[in-house]
Image (cartoon, rainbow, N blue to C red; front, side, top):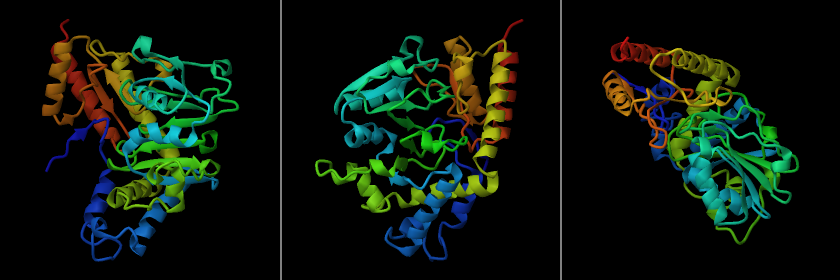
Length: 360
């Protein structure tokens, strides 16, 4: 069997170390004589799996003890509703940087006052809007951002001003790619299917003092329900959580932590951007200071040539590299699990394609 280089924005590639470990434990996990897929979530074996995963994540991200780690279902998209349901009282200030904040804005508006305090829509979201404290709404409860924009390839390099406000961040496509000062945030959430594990799990990291009893909320939409029941009020996505735990183990023991992961990610991104910037064929539309280390969109400037690139790339073993319909062209998602060798191989293919399709 020949594995391809999977540049999908998500569900994305997983570390081969994780896939091999899961394969070894498929029929007998933790000496239980069964697969994790068959385990009761009430068993001591699974309780050890989920607690170990939480402990590893807390160490990796240096999460303070006054924050709770939750494993939630519904994907990142459910958080667009759960956040305002649990935290919105007077209003939310949202910075619109693309598709996922647009969806968050739409859901917020159904539930309370929503202020779009900045947007880069006029430039097709090719930069991160810079705000000042004066741009914030006086009585808003929190500032909401999408830290890395999967579709458009932008990334916050500095937190926006938010004095006197909570800061909430969608980190679905950049979590665990670099060290993060969790204490600068009040709530972080991330769909697992990019940098954490398989689709079906969402990690929520929330300050404990934000966990409140609320009789008006359905139990499954209240963060406190998950905190009070170790994320097992109902049957959680047990196998997904198990794979997340293996990814955390890989990051901690095989990579050596998020500082090392950041170095690897910067190396991959720098290589790819450097080649694109010096190419005669390709270009990247994103403001250089706001470029993502995880998602790199690029175009040739010719839609037919873009389509040819995607077709020939797939034939050469580089899959899921077609850009989002709102951007066009190509997009290489180079999350943690994409090895340096994969980026090097992509660049070689891009060079070959350029030589064959650029006339002197």
